[in-house]
Image 1 (cartoon, rainbow, N blue to C red):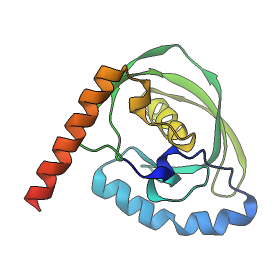
Image 2: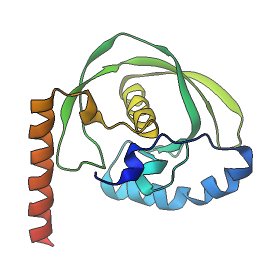
Image 3: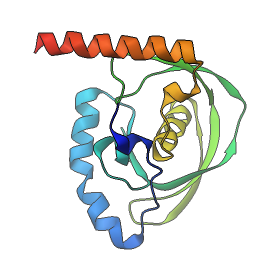
Image 4: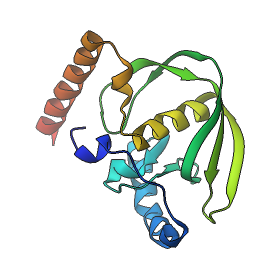
Length: 157
C-alpha cells in the first residue's frame, strides 16, 4: 500500500511497448488468481504504464472513461490494501475507450461489477486508491484494519 508506484500517474502505452506488456500477462494472471482479484493494474506490480488486466484475461490498454452513469454507494476492496473494504461512490454503467492486446481501439459499455472494477483500476492508473474517496476518520479506520490484518498475517506465516 505504501509503494510510491501506486501514487504515480501512469503514462500511456505505445504500440512499440506491446510485446513487453504482453510478456507481463502470465505473472499478472498468476497474481490475480492467487489473490482472487477482479483486475490488476500495472502499477500494482511496479510497472508504471497505463494498462490493466481483467480477471477474464482481457488486457485494457490506455483506458479512458468517455461516459459515466450516476454514482451509487459500492463496497469495494483492493489487492494493494488487503484485509479491508470500504464504501465508495461508483457508477454502475460506464462507456470506455481503450486499446486491446492488438492495439486496436475499442469503445464499449460496461455494467455492474465490471464497470466498478474498471473505474477502480483506472483510479490506480491515475495514482489514486479507493480510500482516497473516504472521509478522513473512515479512511483512518480502514487503514488501521489493514495494519492489523498485515500484523496478524505475519504471525501466521
